[in-house]
Amino acid sequence: MSAGAHETVDHRADRGTPSGSVKEDPMEQRTRDQASKGAALFLWAVVVVALGYGVVSTAIQAAALFTG
Amino acid sequence: MLSFLDRDKSVAPPGYSRWFIPPAALAVHLSIGQVYAFSVFKTPLVERFDTTLTAIGVVFSISIVMLGLSAAFGGKWVERNGPRKAMFVSGLCWGTGFLVGALGVATGQLWLLYLGYGVIGGIGLGIGYISPVSTLIKWFPDRPGMATGLAIMGFGGGALIASPLSAALLDRFGETPADAIVPAFLILGAVYFTAMMLGAMTVKVPAPGWRPDGWQPPTDTAGTPAVDPASEGVSVERAFRTRQFWLLWIVLFCNVTAGIGILEQAAPMVQDFFTGVGPAEAAGYVGFLSLCNMLGRFVWSSTSDLLGRKRTYIGYLGLGSLLYVLIAVAGTSSVVLFVAVTGVILSFYGGGFATIPAYLKDLFGSFNVGAIHGRILTAWSCAGIAGPLIVNVIADQQLAAGRSGADLYTFSLYLMVGVMVVGFVANALVRPLPKAAPVAEPKDADTSREPV
Image (cartoon, rainbow over all chains, first blue to last red):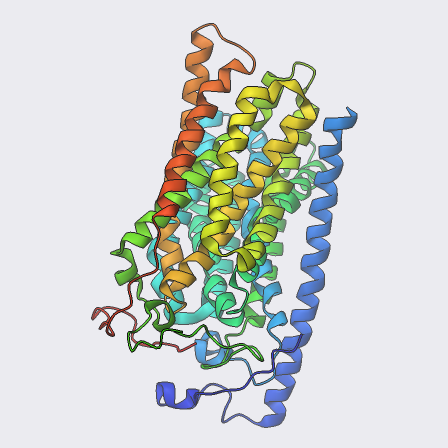
């Protein structure tokens, strides 16, 4: 789902200094954003696999209540 | 050198999908949720230090106390510095906690285990627990219950992952589990540190003024010029002085007290209710309750976005108290009934934890919601003492009076019904903050206000 961001407030004015990425090289900025997105996707995969491992392990243990 | 951790450097660029944020929050909560699986290490630690279960149990108690203290007093710092720095500090503390704890185990110094896993790790727990809450609420103003439910579900899920993982590590890295504690601590510390750093690197805050496509904040339909405190945002100092905060504190305290009483005594309780249930089945029952606890955090908190927070807590506390009566009256009639009813109760317990940040956001706005959430978690610390104490003391007294089986718990179950009724009444008394002229924040309040 795309967030479709649109700024209604200029956050550069919020602190009186340029916000972190405003003055940076656009190419460098784009590369970092892509890396951040890639890392987030990787993290999604990691947490889903980890949660799946936990849920399946626990469900097998819980099954003993009815099959034991 | 660490300026990349600053809030300014973590502002999302235009078009950045908000669905890239939940895995960062989950990475942190799944990691710190390990604390609920600490019991896996208890017996090996007792053997390693040649000490008592009580002396080892102190490690867990210190970490939970430090969780409450750091969440309560570190909330303002988290709000000021943003989620990236908070997650970084949390990961550093949690990883260092394992490292110092491993050193304590290796050198036979129990105080180092208290200092490492208990104090340093406990600070990581508190900061990590509250760090993604405010950010998620700002990214999902249209579905705050679902967003915080997703993160806080991770804390419940952390134990489900850590428990089998720790058991496997203890089995693999030494001749006996006691010999494998040091490598297991080092591996867990490294894994959790890495996961939390990945979370810290990927978390981003929305640009000021950002809103989801097509979503408008609720407006005052009466058209009055008065200021709605929830949309303006209330500072933690001001929220702390309101009746609403303390009513919600009571609501959380009652909901947690009732749930934790069952959770802490689950294994002996099911065996006392049903003579045919042995230790293996009881362990399975505890696992089942953990699953219900985890799923309740996501399902009920998401449902609260549709039902409204107050109605959701009416369900947790009202329906919950009826289910307690059902166990007291007919709990022994069927294992399936007992398991199903306690499972629903534990899902309400988890739901209560996960829905409270969204309830706070509804009442006080998102300006200082992370810090306010940190303060209200002191109710958890108090309930963590009260719940098990009520059930254990009463069970001991009933045992001394010659009772046995399910009779050991009947009185405490009815007492829990009373606790939940108190919470129900407190929830019923919660009203939105009165609309008023703009109120100047206290001088010590955070002035780097970030509009949402």
